[in-house]
Amino acid sequence: MSVHDTQNPESREAALAAATDAVRDGKLIVLPTDTVYGIGADAFTPDAVADLLEAKGRGRDVPPPVLVGDHAVLLALAMDVPDYVEQLAEEFWPGPLTLILRAQPSLTWDLGETRGTVALRMPDDEVALELLRRTGPLAVSSANRHGKSAALTVLDAATQLGDSVEEYLDGGTAKIGTSSTIIDTTVEPPEIVREGVLTKEEIIAAVGDIFAAPEVEDPEDAKGAEEAEGAEGSEGSEESEGSEQATEQDGAEHDPAAQNPAEQADATGAATSLAPAEETDPADPADPADPADPADPADPAEPSTLEATAAPAASAEAPGVLDLPAEPDLVELSTTPDPESPLENAPTQPDPAPAASDAAAEPAAEAPGTDDPDAAAPRRPGGPGEENAEG
View 1 (cartoon, rainbow, N blue to C red):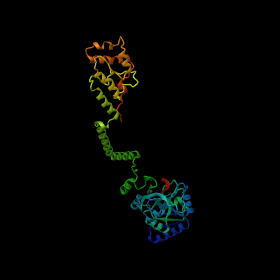
View 2: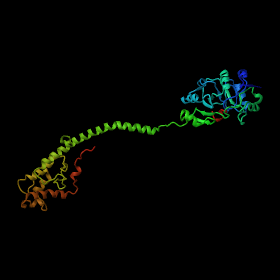
View 3: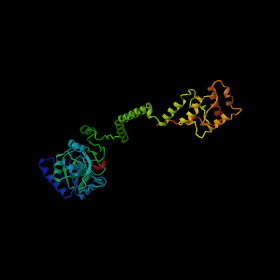
View 4: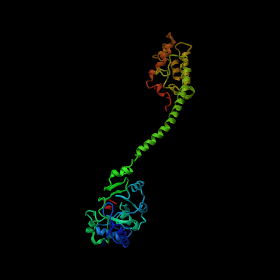
């Protein structure tokens, strides 16, 4: 075990050379940093890293961080680096900030159970930076036994670590004396797993609030917005189409030629047959119709039957005599009158119109089962954690 004074410019070069040789030989060293003293080993020598963990009394489940001497080394050791990480490094490196990143899978090192991550830091100390430029990345943890206080002087470190360390570099009392702040950037949003000398407020003031969760748009709201936008686009065309359909429907309602042919024929026939007899309504239940007739005159779609029934009543030459050639039963009644029938007294009636009306009403009274002509009518169609770094 050797102790070298790095505060004296005359002995600094020899101290750095001895520490560099020890690292290359797979030995452990103690070096000053801006936060606390650290115990270091070559990051790419698995046996040296294992000795470091043993000297501290720590297991592989708490891997050490890695110190680098240049910003560019960050991109060589890490992958999928977020943009804000480079901003953090630019703002706080060298300094008391440790960043947990995803490690390059091609690296041939064994730092312990890192789960594919690595904690990187660039210390703000001249001796440490000069040594790192000579040795390359070093696996470094605080120079103390696990569970003990971090060493702030080389004497504190030597007292706890003893002969397990090959070379001690004495750089005086640590400038800060407090551990670095660790940010895990492998999660979204990033998290501070250990707040050291660098506060969250200082980080936000420098690079913005990277710790706030990004606003995630609700899929239901996005879908509703898209549907609303689509509905607005199609509303005009639907209204236009509805207007055209309404115009066509109005035209059809006012255009007699567009009505139902059966209805038009019915209306025309009814008007023609009923013109001579203004008192007769084809929709009246007292309409003269014999239910025994095979051709049902109750159907308003047969204007010829109505003509045969109504026209003779209006044009009868002899008062009180009904001439119904299309009604065989009525003709028989006229030739062989029933003593109780009103037709027997027809010649004595002074007014031919009431006789015809009485004769027409009598068959309806004798046939109570006759259907209402309105009922037969066609209807209109409807439409790495907190323990990952101590220095």
